[in-house]
Length: 323
Image 1 (tube, rainbow, N blue to C red):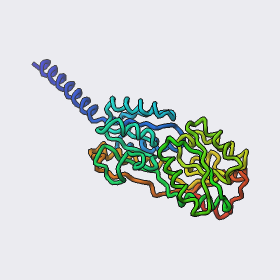
Image 2: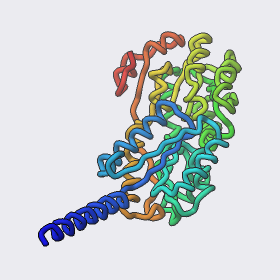
Image 3: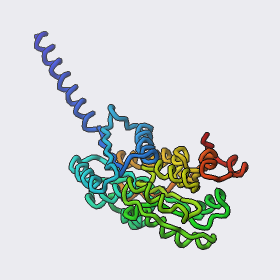
Image 4: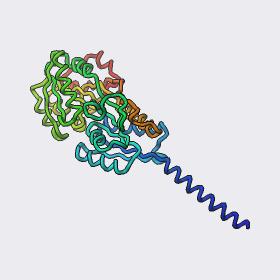
């Protein structure tokens, strides 16, 4: 009788353990993350998302399944990743940068999609407005006030008249910036000179085409350009064309200055939204957000290589001075 009771209790304990294990597995959340390309700013977004999720109680290896894939700059690959992720049915998909977000939003109307590092989500047709979408999409924009970017160009090169820009015309956020600059620059006595770089490998040749035609090159957060920024820096140094960026990581890589967003913080802001969805909120009830905090990064060494002398006050005003 005692043996039978012991056997019954052991069996009950095993069943209980199995049920608890199953419940724990059922409670696990699955977040899939995709980025159009890998470069420091977008990598920082990805890492920020993961850090914010851990802060909110969702940790990989404990109660979170985490999957990341990069499209390596290829929009066709971005579409393939979107289809793959949708087939895997995650609880939320994070899409970093415009092309990846567009691929996902076109492919699913049910799985929550949280975009990040998208300059103009409305122009990219991800959402109809920055208000709560009522659909399966929300996220965080990295839009910048371009008037402040023009002020930065003037601070670096007060006499600049011709501003060059290298960009991918197929990237919606870049086209929006270019069109806006065409409107704004003449008000400051400047004109825009464009150079197309549809692929990352085109960045160097596009930059060289601007030599002798521009006083300064401004780069927005175009993913082709940022992923191949060293090619741009090479041209800037050789041709003595000052480089002004909107991505602060580009200053570490050779731009003179950037007034931009902290992309790690942008990722954490995005991750907080993802956590809200994992906890039960509907993406359609969460308004899209922007980052309000800008940081000035300055690289005096790059300025010297590109033939520019920066004022002492300007350098002192920077949050980060790259040595």
